[in-house]
Length: 323
Ligand code: F6P
Image (tube, rainbow, N blue to C red; front, side):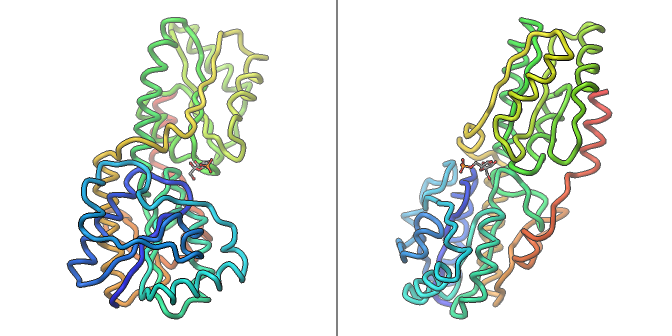
C-alpha cells in the first residue's frame, strides 16, 4: 500500500473535514501518499484528484461541508460508470480508496468493488440521517441534531408567547433518528417518524389536552420521510380536529451546515484514523464504524442492505416524557 485516495460523496455532513484531516495525517504517519478526489463519484470517474498533504488539511477541523466537495452520481449503478471509475483508479495509481458518505455511497462502493481489483475500498459513515447499519452514529448527525434542538428552543419562545402549536420538520429521509433525539432533547410534545404510524385524531386529542391543563405551547417534531414538506399536510389535517393557532417551520439544509460539534469532530477523527488502519491491515470492502463504543468493520453490502432500527430505549424515553 503506497498511494491512497479519499473522497466524500452524497450529502455533505459536518465532521467530514475532520475525517479527511485525520485520514491524511494518519496516512502520512504510515508513509502513504494521499490524493483527494474532488466532487465524489463524479470526480472519481474523471480522475479529478489533488494532492493532500499537511498544508491542504491545515485549519479545516472546524469547518462544515467538505473541502473535497461532493455529488450524487447515479452512474455508479451502471456497469459503464463503474468501469470508467475503475480505469480512473488505476490511472491515478491508487492502492486504496476511502469513501466518506452514506447509504448511496456504500451501495455504489459495493458494486464498484466487483469491478476494481487494483485498489482496496474502505467506507466511513458520514450522513446527518444516521441511517447506516454498522455504526451507532454517523459523522454529521450530532451537529444536525443540535441544530434541530437549537431551533426547537427558539421556536418555543415564540410559541409560548402566542400560545401556538408548531410543526418543526427535520431531515432524515426514510428514518427518524434526527427527529427522535431532537424531540427528547428539545422536550417536544409529539413526534412523527416514518418508523411509526401517526394518528391525526389521537395527536390532536393529546395536544388539546395539553393546552387544557395549562400548556402554553406545543411542538411537534416531524421527520421529513419520503416527502419533504409533509408537515404542511399534517398541520392542515390536524386543523380539522383542533382549534389551535399553528405554524410550520421546515429546517431544511440549515441542518447540514455549520461547524461540527465536539462529538462529530471526535467521531470524524477516530473513523479517519480507523479507515487508514483498515487499509494498512489489508482490509477491503468494509466500512469502519463505532458500535457500543468499540471500533468495528462491517461488510459494505450490509451497511445498506440491513436496516438500522431506531434505538428502542430512546423511543421509550420519548414515550414516557411526552405522556
Ligand atoms: O441524506 C442527507 C439529506 O440531508 C437528507 O436528510 C435529505 O433528505 C437529503 O439529504 C437532501 O438532499 P439534497 O441535499 O440533495 O437536497
